[in-house]
Image (cartoon, rainbow, N blue to C red):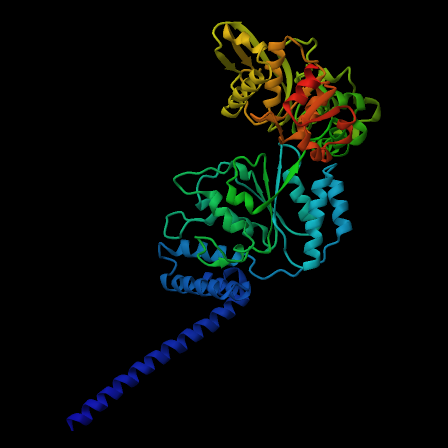
Length: 579
């Protein structure tokens, strides 16, 4: 009897529990059904949980991401709106479901149209455009993203960032840009873990969300200005982003699930490769953006900068005319750069001043644009240019007017393009002491020592003068720091000129590094240096023989105005310069 009683009670309890579970399940199903009905009747009042359920189902995310999203959604359902974590869970689901997860369909690439778009948007840059077209052709054949990451290196204002927009237009893809200048924290690239207060996704995934596409053209600006800090090394974090072998499973710390970046076309820009870490640089293909010549700047201003500036200021075509002579004078006397950024500023200044004049001449009560007639339109000429831009702002270095023993013209590369510099040397009474001024870096100081040793070995008799004289070498301007391996032959020639008393012709400039054996070694930045020489009125330029192949990158208008002489040894340099 007791056994039967216990067994009966257990069955009753079990039956009660089952009825309770069944009742709860039935109620939940009814609530779910009624909620769906309400959502369809009033879509604006749809609950957050239902909204994210739909979004997760439609997103097309991978299994791992879906598991994580469902887990967060269940937690959100259990926590309820009153929970202090509800906002964090909501933000996470909102971010994850806003990303484009589905693999993109390949759209055919029209190479002819792509070439037309690149030519429309940018003047010159033939080698750069050819390389981009090659990349697009390979992608067209493979029917998918393929090829190395492009790194555009050049002076500011040469069109590195804007050509990324042209690539996006040519491919018919979304364009998104990330500025990496000054980033010190690795979390800016990879995101913060969600355990931290104020956690956010990294800039890469934020840009992917902003683009609304899984295959945008992403421009990573100023890669050379990344910095290391206690927060990590952002340059190393970029390795996973840019490596085609790894980025198909890129994991942002905030998302904590892999995302496929292999369909993104990455384009990086930098002013110089010197500060880019070697492992990161190895993953990219460097494409140099040479500086623009005066003729190229003229065409860029006439075809692109002036129409854009006039449109931005609300000035119609017939209201303002900048003559060819005035435009060439702006290029020669108001700007000194490889790019066209300062030229753009000058043109905008003229347009703003013209806008003031045009509005003043309109009778009160009239529509300012319609009331301006061709009679009171403005023409900017060479003679009136100072009224708009003031005195000429650029005092570009010109070749020396007279030759002096111990003074030689060298060529230098700067971030803003090329420049000429004068190496000056002087003997003073003393005991052979060497003084170097002009803020020279360690590399140039060592070049001075090598040059002095070479001159002493080549001119032993003349160099006896150092027994009772000190040597002072100066490179103006003293306020500008200078360094780099390309002043060796200039320093050697300057010291040789000083000890022999033979002056070097002011029409000659030179660039090249020198070895202790007397060989002339190749240098970089040749196009910019030759442009600087041509701008300064130099007639002859001595360059290392190994750099002759680089003349392909130099504009014909620059080569035509210079006599370029290749040299292999220091003795060749001294023969040409000192006879």
